[in-house]
Image (cartoon, rainbow, N blue to C red; front, top):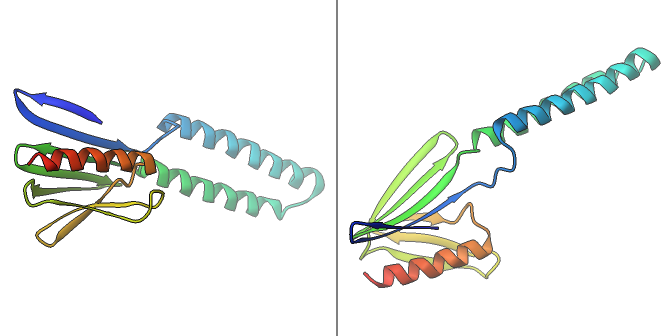
Length: 156
């Protein structure tokens, strides 16, 4: 959560990003290490014992790992930002290469909370449009988001 005072204008912004434990270069190093070890073992068994069926399986395993890491890399910069400024509520969402921006009138926006504490669904609704919030937050983070948004929207 980030609080900003913009020259006396009340403004609050909540930003949530994906938890990336590895950088891009770290993911490349992990893939390279696993690639060398896996194909090295497959080649050793092929050359020493004649177990040639291991090579296609090792290749399929590396292809699957490559595709998974590529998907992670594609979504590494995903984020969700909710900002309240004067009479405007703005939600910015980046999902892969798509960026979306939604603007709502702060006075008309309604916070929708459904489900139990663990599977809580949080959304903003106004004039027939609805955007889900908290996709990069755990249950505790969504609870804090709900509490802060209720408090700030209640000031409107």
